[in-house]
Image (cartoon, rainbow, N blue to C red; front, side):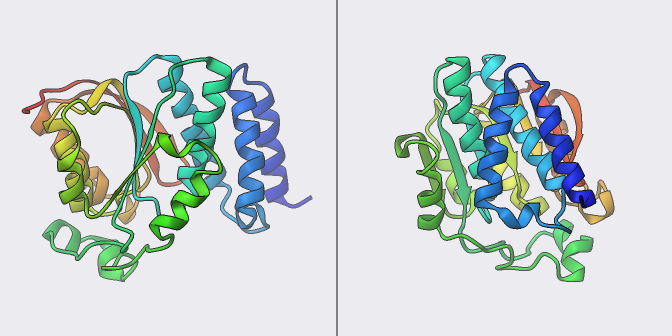
Length: 262
């Protein structure tokens, strides 16, 4: 057995030990293997499996802890994480018997925006060419919706097509989010996504935020999602718990309180 096979077996055994989320994770694991087999091939990054696990645990947390609101993802790219979240939502609906939540998806479907902010222009990944305008473009909107509608009902999907600086501002005033998966890469994109959410009070008490690219740019706090979060914490007096890292690049936080501006 390859080292990668041993990792997958370890994940399966760990899932069996979990009382409620175990069945959810086993189901997501089967779906992920069938839909994204390349992730389970020899040489694939098993940290992606850990990231999927934490997304599932995040969904279970907001259902079990009765955190108000829906779930949102900023940056859909291949659709892999959106599918993971959707399947976890479906299984939590079935096993936990909570009020169903909706899944909001935000993406330009044009790749990354123009690199305008100096904080981004000076970042390591931009300078090296890893992040470029138009980069990270994968699934089209219709392809993404088609894949997700095989996992949860279409009426539970809300897709905002466009740049965050334009779309997030159009959210109805009563919109509340229990969980955010932030895969924005750039500092400016992260600010465009999150600043209006805090400003208008769209984040619920106990909301979970998972930052996918926290440790990019050599884990420097001067760039990307780390810089954006630091500024947001100061601007909105956010009280939060740091609930740890996941995968090689992710970190997650629970929001307890903040000062919205509305």
